[in-house]
Length: 221
Image 1 (tube, helix red, strand yellow):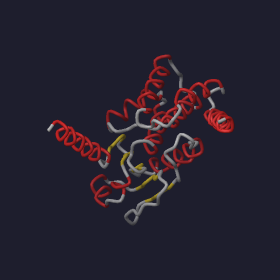
Image 2 (cartoon, rainbow, N blue to C red; image 1 turned 120 degrees about the vertical axis):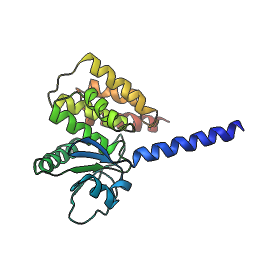
Image 3 (tube, one colour; image 1 turned 90 degrees about the vertical axis):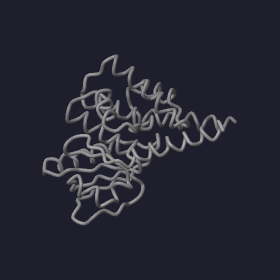
Image 4 (cartoon, helix red, strand yellow; image 1 turned 90 degrees about the horizontal axis):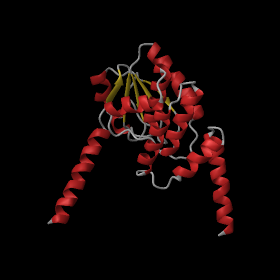
């Protein structure tokens, strides 16, 4: 009986997570965050007055007519470099918002890829640290959890934007990496973080170092 109850609890938790994932979350009055499933539902646009969509998936999605769309092919992988995507997607978001559009930002489940772009947007427009942006977004959408590689790159984005760092913020980022690593267990978080710091806050160099070390270890095995 104990095993049956445990399975029911697990199923209940899955249902709750699924419900949160497919919820259309208003992060700001003109920025919404959700999943691909919600993005394909015409009611998402009717009920929220959404007129533009930013997609960050590996799949193309069908949207209602007369919706402005922008798609970036983004993999939810710690190997994926976000820099160019952030630059172009944020420019497009600003253009849409300034034109009076309400924008839905989505990936597959609205947890990592699209959440990372929304976090970067909050950092840029409010001049917030990653901690401030994450806590604000998390309070609106509880399932938000970028993969560890994206978290490090968002921290890099904060530095690039000239947003003042604090000990409190950097400690929060390290804790967030640990939390994210429970979902993305294959990511060598500690090694990547240390390499990121050693390479002058360059995630691209950190990834190259990781690949070089991994290749060397493979040859030695």
